[in-house]
Length: 252
Length: 103
Image (cartoon, rainbow over all chains, first blue to last red; front, side, top):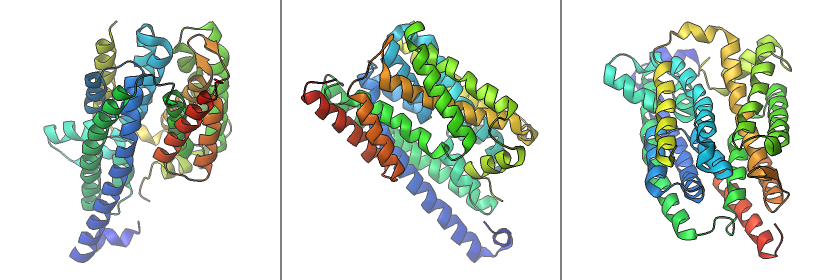
């Protein structure tokens, strides 16, 4: 990420593009592996194979997909509005990524539509980690292609496996769902502030479970983020900004 | 509301949020508060989901095979074991505990 790279000649240029391509393929492959878990859990929650696959094609953002499935598992179709809200709130961060990645993508209506569709944690991280515009673009589109193809293929595989399994509890799939959320959460627990929010949110959601409709406790727990983030508790101003940028892989 | 409606509405909502990001000027990110809140919202929701998925059965709380399975998962993630292996391990732990008749 040194600044000289961006003024480098063709050799440096092709090298950084090659690195970007490599990173994209690796990240795509790793993400694809989650797809099996998502597919199996979605079917266990009561979605059919088609619904499971449509989510991966259209929504294409793992956190939201897992969240929707999690709320449906807890509350069934009656928890639909809460399931939609959970998925949407977790999808807000993709909008923020879009603001950041948009200048990398450049002009062109259809290109920007396609780019927006695949703007997620993985594509944002890989593209913004590259040293120059060309390799940023290569990184973005390689990661997008690898993740999109991999995620949708493995979703289908997972859904078919889940379908053949029968009672999900016998296979421990409900515990696997909780473990999957721990895995999505884990890389974000690097600062005092996120640990505080995570702890408070979990406790609030558990305490509210007996007194609220399934799905709602999760949404109410989200208020901790508004309060702690709004007042910036547990984090001094400059450090929070720096770590935030680092976590999202913005080039220096 | 049918399951199909939930799937389609939620998918379109997430897709719209992605598109919205490309319409907003990048000066929005110069203010740290919206970015920070968005980050923390993700953390809060994921963590709340861990809590609910571990202890809730519909409207009540239960201590069953899921809790030890999630504890094992936390331990494995702390040792940087890859995602898929941890998820499978958690499932195996819960399934084995249930084989013994508890949870």
